[in-house]
Figure 1: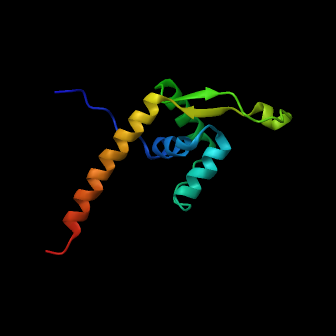
Figure 2: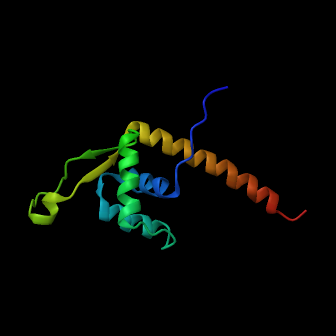
Figure 3: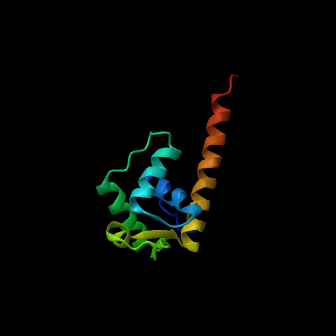
Length: 112
């Protein structure tokens, strides 16, 4: 039997989804996760950066250079993150697993 992969935490799942459209810095990741979830997900700084570190350690995201032309104070200090090929693959597998689960759950909820 092939080894099973642990499911992504909700925070990790939201972070990876936000990075599918390109590199973002931490605060932009937080904002996009909140927007995508219509406010249901709130990533505090501890959760956000601890989860990003776990994703970095797992090779699912990597730090990348900012594409900002204006390297003033705060912008120059921001760290940007992007999805790796492995991260995109793992995210795709996770989304497919959730799709199958939701489909099954919907069938069970249909009236008999």
